[in-house]
Image 1 (spheres, one colour):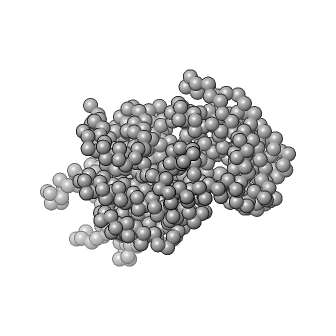
Image 2 (image 1 turned 180 degrees about the vertical axis):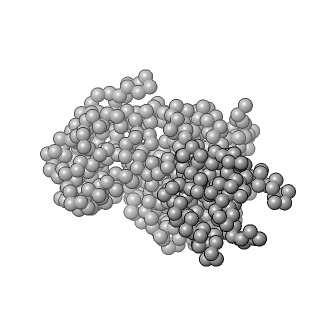
Image 3 (image 1 turned 120 degrees about the horizontal axis):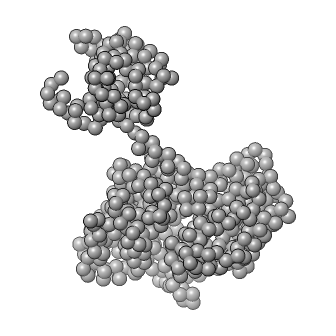
Length: 559
């Protein structure tokens, strides 16, 4: 072997092995020896089967025999994932690329091998995210929906109970998200004790839970279980030194009376839940068919919102996205607010739900896109290299003219495409809509950034990386809140950061509230973050004032 080639083989982290025509190892570099636990002298001259699990040896040797006889090796030049055998008898997942050639001694074969144990472990963690809510340990929305469908497909009856917490927002605003998350965890512990042992419980939203009762279709049993939930909230929660009182609004639906498939049954329970909340909370409602007609409250809200849009009552606030290394603002997320003439400044949660499946969602969505592009253009003209992210409504992605709307706002405001980022939520990704994917791909071809929001919270996280042309991963705040106290949250966050970095994507951690969280993320290699640590969403004029001052957030390098 030439000297330079030998130096490379000794220095590379890739494991390199070659075998002769008899299938014996004739070369192994130091990385190969370390991977399999042998010294070089222990490997040279040994049959290649010493690193092949016994169950795979027959197929492997047959393939080599065919290749030595001049037949084409199907795997030549291709990279495949298989298991290999180490000296201690354990197996290790590897990625291997094979090549074959002939020299004076006859047939030879070589392999470039990579240990993918860390990748497999990371993928395993992400797969667990597909079925479990990491904050409470309960089922997540995806697994709950799948379990419900499985139950109904088996011909079994089912009851779906949805509950939404009354007063949770006030607790969150008063005591902070850390206390709020601890409260959600406490609820996740208390609920199973209140319900039947075979009840399946899930956390399907911020403060929304769901219960599946299999083989239950009678209103009396369902009402009894719903009442047990209400009673469970009668006792205050003691969390982080605080005594917290809150209630629950509950809606439930029965199969097959209220729905014969999972989607219909959940929708019916949601209608009932909405009626329970509008009744003042701490109430139970069973679905009836009159609820499916649009409620007057939602209709009135949409009418008011349309008038508010016309009167200029809507405004975009912005939350900074900050470099964790030097404290500079690297991006802004646009968040809509409504200056209601009677109720004051309203966050999106107070009015956006009324827009679901409404034509008004498109009109407000296009206004939001144009307003964000206008502000991004102002930053561009002022010389600030900052991107602005804007959330898209599902209706916008399903619209045929999304790409034209994006192109028009870029042209109208003379905005560089890379200064605008479209944020896609998990709900949109789970819809698995080909039209939505095509729209996102077309926007990406314009040069616009594509961010996946709340990454890691469900099954969509595993498939979206392949289906969507992403540029940014935003790690859900649920992982960040306990990164300093939970080794599992730390490990998952590390895996998500590594996954995004390996794919060449920008990574932003959401929901950073404390210096300790910030330092932990820095140690894990996270480059950027956003959250109350760096300020609440504020009007664009205040963002400009902050940018004109000294460095927005002082450098925070690790010592």
